[in-house]
Image (cartoon, rainbow, N blue to C red; front, side, top):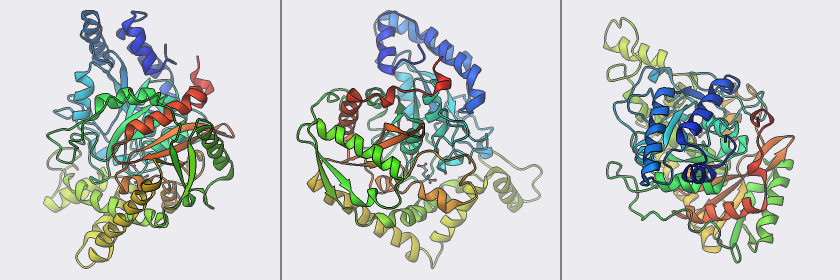
Length: 485
Ligand code: GLN
């Protein structure tokens, strides 16, 4: 049961091959038996998961079930869950039990999905390796000496290790796609505004977006159907109508034009990773797509631009953690100033402090024009590069990351080396576009991800291309040796 896709679980529940309680029990037992190896979950509440499964079984029996009714899903611990701790990977929120559900959680509940647990993550979603969590690093199920990627590393590892059939993640600069690539699963970062951000702890509000992480494009489509849509309580959520993301999965790729940005195939790309990507592109070509050479001339500016804008927004968002309203509070403050400083000193980890310092600096009087405003102007140019490409092509393809997963500890003392991990993913967030990572082979037994980037709100096409690719390949069906039994 544990190695079935969401689509197969949906079918099995309808055909009464098993109940939601049985499926949920199976995954809870696997988490209990195996997660000490991976550390992919922060919180699991077996009692409420089984109660939700029981309720789902009733709905299924009554015939009024939604597609995801009874499917257990793991959620990144960034989404507020009513009555269940939401830590965001931080000591600051270690004691925070939200009094409400994020809109995304509400939607999964509305459709009868079961909350399997809350997954580990880099603190406040800042990181590319999952080594920044207050709850300790997550290990890559393909090789526990390697990082799983970040910041949604717990979600990626849980799916890869078959501890959850699917999970949610968030992506501010690559945090769905990069861990999906490192763990050999499929992840989709939707268009900015496609999924509500209400109740999702804010990192960089103009970049943050939630999306599905699963074994296949088809499963991502099933999850996106539940997640996507206007939320009147989030003014940045989009009014664009939501389509049935399954409807176009099987469309032919005949005539599809795929742009290959030459900047994504240059010096920084690991050779063996590049070869996997080229083989994947040949497969898409064999299905009738045309490969077109394109350019994203401002690519070299994406890392500096992102690392001004994201910390700037983070520094304002994180000012709410003051020890007064909720979350951690230092013991015995002597005065208000002591309360603020000691609470924040104790509650935040090093990377979060680094971002707050950089962001506060970039926003301060005298520096705002030189840094933040300039970064916003460059952001516009980066977006324009994509718009120009999409005049010529339907999607853009390339590697998700410059190379496969690296060893735990290898980059944790070198923030710049860590930031370079995001070189192919950041621009997608700066431009607000949808992007996906699809398993596309292995380098030394380490998974490699193919990145596909689409026009705004063209998620259905990305899912279509990924699905067709997955019909012809079996990379997404391979599981780490330890997870099989
Ligand atoms: N790795 C990037 C960062 O550290 C992106 C993180 C994310 O997408 N949440 O900011």
